[in-house]
Length: 461
Ligand code: MN
Ligand code: MN
Image 1: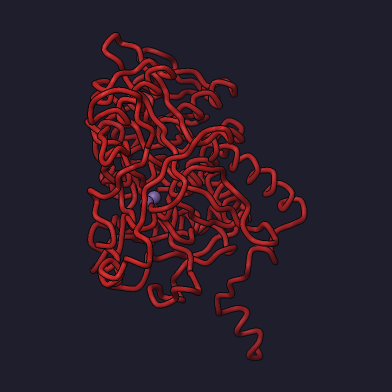
Image 2: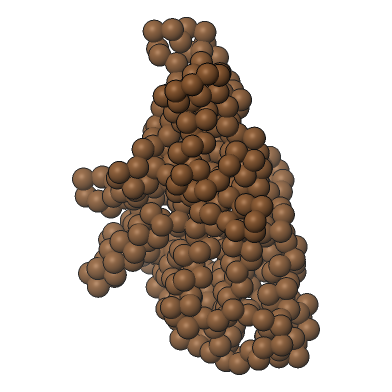
């Protein structure tokens, strides 16, 4: 063998995905991404994503799973977990004792939540007080258009859904920053202290109602909300209202190869696994799609991936087939579909170039996340990585390796550990993202589409 033959046969050679996809795939990629962008405009919170998923699932013949139901090959089920997370399944030809092929993503994203008593007035300007949710760089959320999304549950048992700031005719909300002319002290602070959590106060109104008192602007806000939504101030105490960046998902770049949006992490993977589930025939093994909440704050709570609602869902299907659920888990596989950090040539110093994911190189497979000495990672086994590698290669999926930055640079986690704790073999994989957790994050269309194909291949494995 000459050197070139030796090189070809022995060395890895990664190639930009655009050199590898067919014209037909490119057309399908564009359609897929257009639909993804519509989803993103409709689903900026876990509640909105769940609502969207229920509707999409029902339109495709999925029915709500209830105890006592049969679970036969081809049956399609979903379980709406209190409007905040959802699990879907297509029952496979093999019994659940053979295991399930699971894709698990999360549909919550970093943002600011209103405090239980949010409304106040200062200097005749009305504000909402917020508490940020998830890992944000607080300074990024100043001086940009913001929207209010959420639900208010009233004492009479009714609830009202609120969205302000998304319609072209809506006003937007706003958190102020300091003018550079007077920012001498501010600019000398480290970035984490440029703005304090208690300064993330959202401007609501500046026109006082006519009358006497020091609460006339605040009262003005309540009057507007009451006229539109029938709520009173005390109703905020039983509400979930989120402040998110206002505006629609946009194509980015002159070649339109990228997509900019709030909350790609992790709705870009959630959408991929859901669409994949909607586009498979009856699989060999039962295919399960999980859209979890609360990943950004540790996968905790009743709607997070640590919740036993997953056992409840799987248990009903296992019971229907007379299968021990632990037996099912023992033979199951989970793709923890979550985003990775794409190599950013503006900030190359935080990653290991040889092990970092890169835009347009396809879905990024991540053996481990964690921080320091892999702390907190589930660290997939060689066997699990081989399963993913083989499955994706056999299906012709464009994929690459990812690690979360340089050793000792920082770190993070996903739902992977919580699936692995259940005795389910789990590997992380997802879309590489530029500026993760920023108000607008950027992903490549090719990687979005590759992740969709990867989820499909896993379901059909
Ligand atoms: Mn994530
Ligand atoms: Mn995240």
